[in-house]
Image: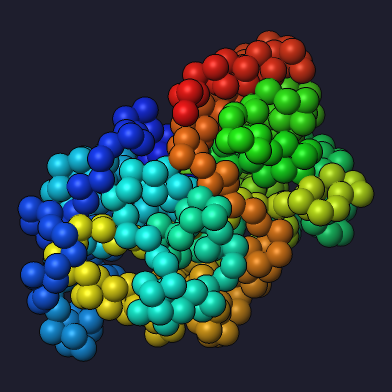
Length: 438
């Protein structure tokens, strides 16, 4: 459930028209932010719950609260992740779009480059309560550096290392691994009798690129140089990808069949005791739906290299959902009022509690709902060791191409083919050569 929220960028990114003229949204036929429809708003929400209908059940009572407070009626449409980016891109070019919408936070800079989204400058932030209300890491994932954010954080997530306490105890492991060497050693102790140390979602391009980014940061890879040009096949990037693929190829603590996993099978395997560890984002609600008791697992930061410091201590990308306003909305004042409502303390508690995510609004994090060991651990990661994916216009293409390169390498490993520095570099060079010139 979690990973599918962010996977749409990899499904349709080839259509991303970054040079499109921004003619924006509006409740019906576009507009110019003239507030000519002061009593209506259209909201495109992403699928956060167990189904589109579940999201409607969650959101519609909250939208009625907003209508009672403001007199503004919100027309809700929940859009599956497989369609959302295509719908947004069509809206940026046709003018037929919503007033307010959800976007995966990794898309922020790419959609910002279209010019279709309202920049959150000091004045816009002032109308929703101020920029300082949000965790800095989540603001850093809302647009390109040096520019006003193109959206504001709504739901936040981070990766953690989930580990099965009973399996660790049976293997004589006293604490979760803090370094990658410890992870491999622990995984080898667990891998026996048909069980494996860790599971990976190798067929999921989005999962792959998230881990490629995090491990890349741990090795010193930046993925783009100072001028914004792709740098995918550096020695640091090669080392990071090989380390991940070696979970199947060399270390053999992940099952070869994991190379085909693409639909949350990792979570299923972890919840059913087939594997001892997984690197996942905000998995609690999903594990509960599989019948796993929170007392049966622990959550720790994703391990880092021995002796790491600075950005090499990165243990997660900044994951989450942002809330954006189309620049050409016919109800700019109402749209900003709605953003203020959705990011208010009460709504942040209510919605993030329901979805099992972390509130990006600081004052909401003190609620008891977020005091679980899992969310406390992930909140610490988000606040101290998470980094945003590259905030460049071609970020979405980076996700697709590098994620696919990792998928291909994992498939090769699963088939018993050798995975070497040379073969990893060849895949990353091919990915880099496919990036748009600008």
